[in-house]
Amino acid sequence: MSLTERDQQTAPVAAASSRRRRPPGPTVADVVRAVTAGPLPVRITGYDGSAVGPADAGITLAIRSERGLSYLLTAPGDLGMARAYVSGDLALSGVHPGDPYEALRVLKDELRLRPPSLAEGLALVRGLGWERLRPPPPPPQEAVPRWRRVVGGLRHSRLRDSSAISHHYDVSNAFYELVLGASMTYTCALFRDPDDTLEQAQAAKYDLVAGKLALRPGMRLLDVGCGWGGMVRHAAREYGVRAVGVTLSRAQAEWARAAIEREGLGSLAEVRHLDYRDAPAGPFDAISSIGLTEHIGVGNYPAYFGALRDRLRPGGRLLNHCITRADNRAPHRSGVFIDRYVFPDGELAGPGRLVSEIHDAGLEVHHEENLRRHYALTLAAWCRNLVAHWDACVAEVGAGTARVWGLYMAGSRLAFERNGIQLHQVLATRNGPDGADDYPLRPDWTP
Image (tube, rainbow, N blue to C red; front, side, top):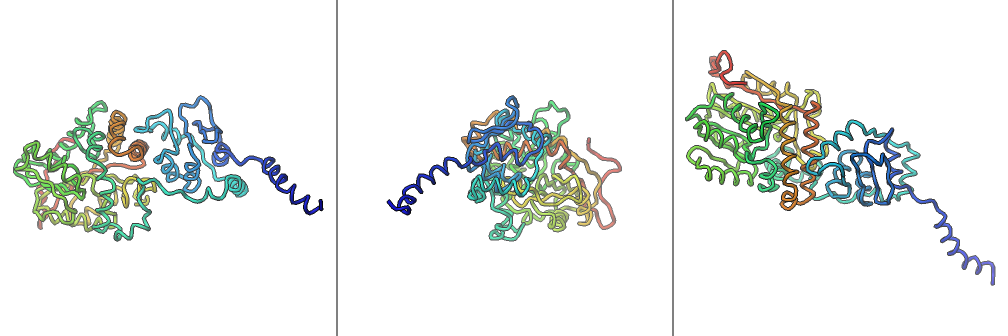
């Protein structure tokens, strides 16, 4: 046998032996160690059997598949974790998926991340395989990136706003009934006491709005962004007001109309499927905007508040209720998780910007208050509802969407508690040509 023939026969054996001797690639635990610093506050386990962190930790994160690891590697931060969690490739134990608040609190307060060095990063990628850097398709609950939404129109055009509202609010009326409770109200409630029920707190919020607007029988109220018609029905039922609401969500409008008919309020209350820009011209005695301002875009504030002013009679009142940044200098656009999974194109401004825009639209601000802590209590109540009705919610919208809601509401609760975001009510009037505002020397409502 020639030397060449002998080499050809032994080459496959040598190659196989080399593969057996090659050191194994990095484990999931190795990856975690490379991107964290200090002791881990949670246990992290991998699909490969590796684990890191205290064995007796109250919370465990399980990376259940190679796809889950790829999500984390290709979109570091909130987006990658959200993709892995929503898809089920990242699982949490020690908390309920309907309320992962405690896990989010521990991770925010105690997990220390660090960027790996260039050498560490290259070694990890080589060991894991470059294919790990190819992003897997995102879960179906994820909206397309901002730059791709241009096919649906410019940001905050009518068509694109309609699409964004549908993404969030047309999920399922049955799902919202389970999460929001009997009030079917998806805005911050008002708690006179932390032990108030959610229904008591939502009724108290509507009464506060009605009091600030000085609603009386026979008055005309416009409620823009009316949701499922909670304020419209409350104003008609409790104050004898002729109320009309508008919403961009067709599902909300259909539910609200059925509720108005069911409650026998058809002679006073009405909900229309309309953009706020197409709302009836009025003039109205009062206008409420409860949770709409977050969706219209900060650049549209002048046109928005101008449109509301034009629909008010001289001396009429406007109550604007919306989430704000805690800092007037903070970026307006939301973070990537909220933008992709919750409120596409949503924007928030600081309270100073909000008050300034209302003034600059020709309205006079008389009162402002921050209900930040009340929203944290509201979100905690919604999470309790989601936990209590978890199986029914999953049956209605699927496990992925239900996980989105648990993550979003628990994370928002933490942000309100930590003063990362706030909730402000601003009360203003449209004055007459001589400055008359019909507003008393002291407030005619109970704070």
